[in-house]
Image (cartoon, rainbow over all chains, first blue to last red; front, side, top):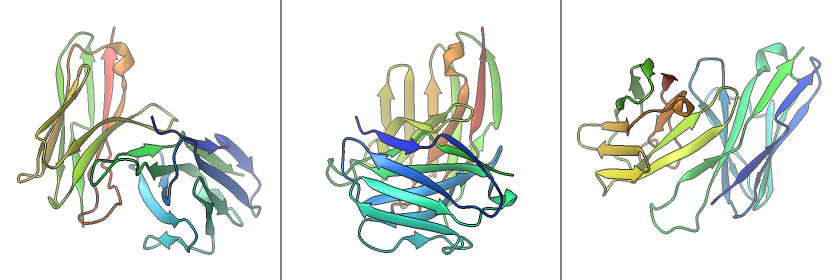
Length: 119
Length: 112
């Protein structure tokens, strides 16, 4: 089945530094990937849609200059949290859609998530 | 805008019980609906994907139903086991788009 690998699984960084999170589709190509953020005991909130070869689409209220997304290949999207602050501490999860199915016969596969702690 | 509500928010049952988790959504213009489980501190594992043309989908002890017209989906778990303990999330897409919308989930605890 479709597998999405996310790395690192956890990271601690100092306030003001930048952190990069990788999301890879291992056995399928993904023209579109999605980045979510989840605060404790809250639901997943979509941050942005990553589009291969073009600019990401950000949800309302998400700062595109702070959360840089790059989708340079059909199997890799990266999220860089720039100038991280403690309020950016959260659980970040990516997902991708396997398009090998036809029409609406697809499902989303999620990575294992990255726990970011900014100190 | 799609809004998702899951009831109950938490559920604790003894091992072996059959149980039902409920999901309601406001925008019924969806192609499908997906159920996931999330273990603490982990990503999401897909459980079932129901197409809008289907009314039910089964995988092992799990059965999910979808009633688009009423904006409801249920996840039925038969003969629950301690390993089923997790948070269960339903995720219909935002109507007419690829974006999934999540509820807060139902936290299930199955006691041995």
